[in-house]
Length: 475
Ligand code: ASP
Ligand code: MG
Image 1 (cartoon, helix red, strand yellow):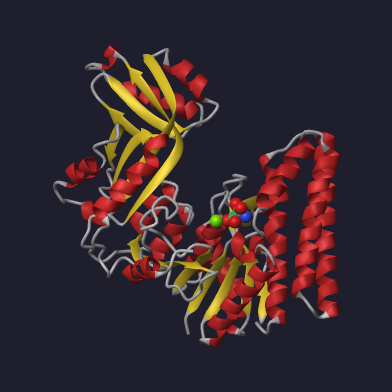
Image 2: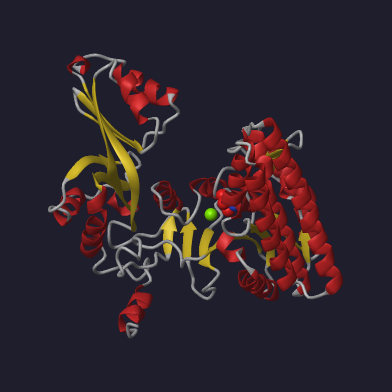
């Protein structure tokens, strides 16, 4: 019997209807003889609201913070009552929700008194989202006949103490999963736990960073050597490009870990890039599936993607970028210059996306942020600096560009009408990226899609759906 980790994102548990769909999907798996371990996010938007409550409180807006918490309390209570019909179970769940919100309110009042929000307290506040959602989901499963057992994720996922982006301790997680999850599974139970939340070895609550529930899914899958990790979301999987930009976008049926990581990094919202790692290490396939369309096959992410007839699998775009040009004749024949430049970005804790250099100039791209003037001021100690916002990075990903000649010519021919500011062919040899004006991004994607996905390889892309779409009468 195969053990599958099924992670459901915020939209898959956003309201009673979504939680019922999720329960039906899991019940289907149990009926098939699978052994699911379920990881859930907080109800959609709850994490953002909890963070807002915390920052309101820390600014002294006690009333505002408690008002947010009170709305969240009602939403969770209403959701629980709509789902759980058994009066005793429903009352028990509502009591539990109330207890959690009472203690959250206490923390918010404390924050409003001390007027300081530390990363540690921020993690404690946001943890309520997953702590409560996982209770509601577990109770719903039980009522729908699934033998669910709620597990506090903080007892299994142990991290270091870097609050807000804690690093998982793999060997401890493996041990805890063996002690806490394995026996439940062996007794025919379906463990249900929150994603994203964890604790350090002292038991203090930490989180894995925004979007971290996918990471939890992969960690649990890795620790239990699951046969697959399923990421249930509200899209059909990884697409060849954003379907809102280009209606001809196709579902990618199968993609390699490396390609998916590259896409995730470049803003494809489908999954957290770090998800890939624990899965890759153990060679566990990751499936991206749609809980609104559960019969769709989604995208399968595997170690080695099969050969594809066309060079690229997908086109991703990252917007709201700035480009920084550093020009200095001093750079000619000197060494250590690049490291000085990077030291400045490091000092401002500003990640750099793409770099391109010539003898006398360096161009770098970063997410537009309010540290840019300070960074530019520091850089101007070394050289002439210019920076400009409203840029977009287009990233073409595909393992089959490795070693193929003429690809760059085809790419730039397809967008010959668009001004390209910066080019980089990734060292990984599986992406080709370039920087353009934000306003040209959509046009670039459409032109590239038309050029490279005209004759899609049916082994890799879902051509049938596209045919269906084209045949379907427009409404
Ligand atoms: N709820 C968390 C967030 O919104 C984690 C997740 O859903 O992946 O970031
Ligand atoms: Mg997510």
